[in-house]
Amino acid sequence: MRERLRTLARHPAARVPAASAATGVIVGLVVAGFDYVTVDLILQRFVEWPLWMQAGAPAVGLALAALSLRYLANGTTPATSELYVQAFHERHTRLSLRELPGKMIAGITTIGFGGSLGLEGPSIYAGSTIGEQLQNWLRKYFTRDEANMLLTAGAAAAIAAIFRTPATAVIFAVEVPYRDDIGPHALLPALFASASSYLTFVAVLGTEPVLTLGRGIVPSLGLKELGGAALIGLLAGLGGRGFAWLIRRAKSISAALGVGWRVALGGVVLGSLIVASVAVYDAPLTAGPGYGAVDWVALQDEAVAVVALLFVLRMIASFTTLAAGGVGGVFIPLTVQGALLGRLVAGLVGQPESGLFPVLGVAAFLGAGYRTPIAAVMFVAETTTGVGQILTEVSVGERYVVPALIAAAVSQLVAGESSVSTFQRRRRLGHLERRFTLPITSALTTDVLTVPPDATVTEFVWAHVMGRRERTVPVVDGGRYLGMCSLEEISGVDRSSWDNETVDLHMRTDLPAGRPSWTLRDAVAAMDESDVETLAVTDADGYFIGVVLASEIVKLDEILDETGG
Image (cartoon, rainbow, N blue to C red; front, side):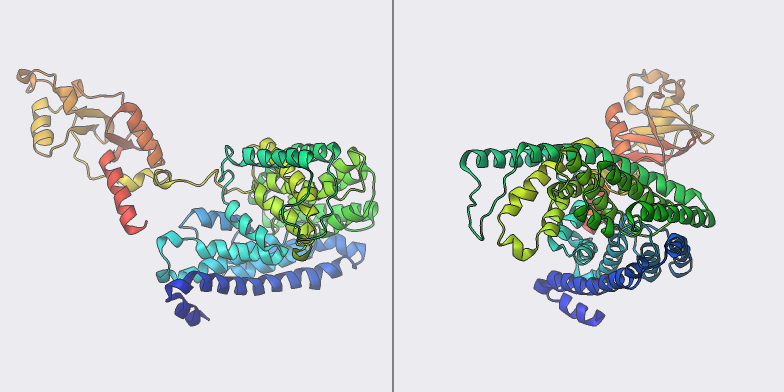
């Protein structure tokens, strides 16, 4: 397979499609196997087990996951889809193919034995790992502009396979690395403008489509539906912020607790939640990804309080599974919470039988949690309507997508800067911004000739200004940085006093000094504020390390451009 891919990659026109298609085939097979083992072989049997086995299964699954991570995955962390986002941004981060089997087994045991996480986490990890490995094998056939191409392709392939939503997969894989990639100044106005323009137009001229591809049966949307969409967006934004906070807390707890305590406490809590779920709902709705909870939402007509209780129980279950070191994703848990939230709003507005509000809840809650509103709306469109039905039901656009856009837009406003993804960046960086994120050490010069404070002005001029063509020199005494002496400061000193006056009388002590932990952005900002071309760098105790020159930053940028660094 490797040699065949290399042969295809030698042809420029075939390189990208051939490599991407091969990635999709391999990822599709791996994800299909993962889904079959987890769902068909374990989860479907889980619901038929006696209650005592269901209650004890999560502890067993968490223990097996911990053992798998330690002995089969080289002691790696439970992180899955987060590693895709991290690898997307950080070139030094590599996804290990050797760790993949162990992490996939950990995902199978966590989710298959009742952990409340989604299958998409291990799937995305598998897809991005496979994509990155293929690109590493074929790296000489890819340009630097094609970096991360197969990494992203692998993640998209995994999402398309596990959810059966190819369009959502493309959007999500590209959208998730950034919170505001499209930009709040463009996305939210576009969402609101497009939805309001559509509704205004159809209110005046009706809903007859431009292209009649099917029956053209369009159900009406009233104020209750649109108001409900806005309410769902508001609550989902708040819920998404709360869920993101819980995810961060769960990860910190998981890192602080030992494996034994995590497994024991997590097993007890998850087992208790299963018992409570069976007592109230006659089914273990808190176990697994949550497909059963979504089916329950669609089929039941329960009181609002009963739905609210399941919302809380599922939230606790997902939090506990992550805190206990379980392996899985939060895409589906967010989806389930959104469906439950939509069902709650449907009950509050007096339409508990409506199937619209749970769908809107999914779009709003998922979009707020991951900050991927476009992918969330597309996910709703793809999962509520098959491809064939889209071609025959023009009602889909108004009935689902338009209110989903409203709900997603409102949720984005309320969610603010929160996100369930730790490594997600706010927006895509431009060329110069990427340079500015480099550490200050990338432009640091340590081989610097300094001047002692008791040197005379004459010594400074002849040794540094005339001898080395240096206009600014650090003043250092016993390794400790004191200030900067420059030609500008001594130019006003009378020539007859050069032999008698020392450098410390004319050095500047008000200039900033950088730290090794700074980035180039910090250095440039400090130099710009002080209007200098040279920045001294010291340690925390004030001892001199070196200098950063503005000319060296420019030179570094040119070198990186030439080398593709």
